[in-house]
Amino acid sequence: MTTRLADIALQAGVSEATVSRVLNGKPGVAATTRQSVLAALDVLGYERPVRLRQRSEGLVGLITPELENPIFPALAQVIGQALTRQGYTPVLATQTPGGSTEDELTEMLVDRGVAGIIYVSGLHADTTADMQRYDRLRAQGVPYVLVDGFSPKVQAPFISPDDRAAMTLAVTHLASLGHTRIGLALGPKRFVPVQRKIEGFVRAMQDQLGLGAEAVESELVQHSLYTLEGGQAAATALIERDCTAVVCASDMMALGAIRAARQRGLEVPKDISVVGFDDSPLIAFTDPPLTTIRKPVPAMGQAAVRTLLEEIGGTPAPHSEFVFMPELVVRGSTASAPGDRGDRGRP
Image (cartoon, rainbow, N blue to C red):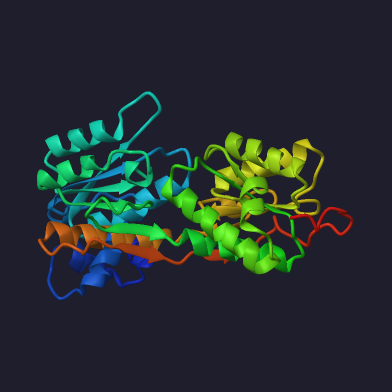
């Protein structure tokens, strides 16, 4: 027991006496200190004493489209931790191809009496989807918050990154390196974040390089799937159009773009620069380390939870969108444009 106290104290950065007070449920310990000790218990793999286990305020559903893209588990972890700190139990429900749909997962969560639901990159982001499903959910009295996407038809709070600003950051960075032939690889056009990225990209290409909007969208924008293979296919098409840099709408697509370049005997970043989007876990350790646009995951996840709990508490947020600013993270996949290209003046 003494060894365990010492380990926990060291991990939490407090005295053994403080650890003992927390474990025995004694008063006189600050809430933040108590939280540090409980976190140390969890990190070291010790089971919490029964008296310290938090009684659940209820279940909160979290619906994500998939977990293969590491940005979704990262967001789920932030949301799950924030819910747990507030006494709620997160229930993760994931769509899979050929598996449960968003509507089926929603019904399952509602049947289990969840206090609310957080949707990440759901049908609310698809401009072709029927938005009445969210009206029906509200009519059932279930609060919800929508992350990554927007629809004026849905009376709910939305949490989004600034996709247009993200493209401005990427294009400005590449233009400063001398690139004039910059391509954009992204998902299907029916999704709101895709449309916003295109708007931001076209505007940045106009502002930075003086290119016409029509020429940019017809020649330098390539739609595909949000997968490694999708990025590879899109980047291959853009490389064939003499692009010396490719901005990708996800880090997974960016890894596919690097693979496409290598298959053509090109070096990244010597021959072609690649920019990702998300800054998902482990992406700093790829070869080369990926320059990317960091999605503000911690801020977005915490805002989603805070907003949902306000809805649950009876003080709903207005029908509005909370937009979070992304950040450019420069690593090793971008460099100066190759100087021996003869096509850099093309539109």
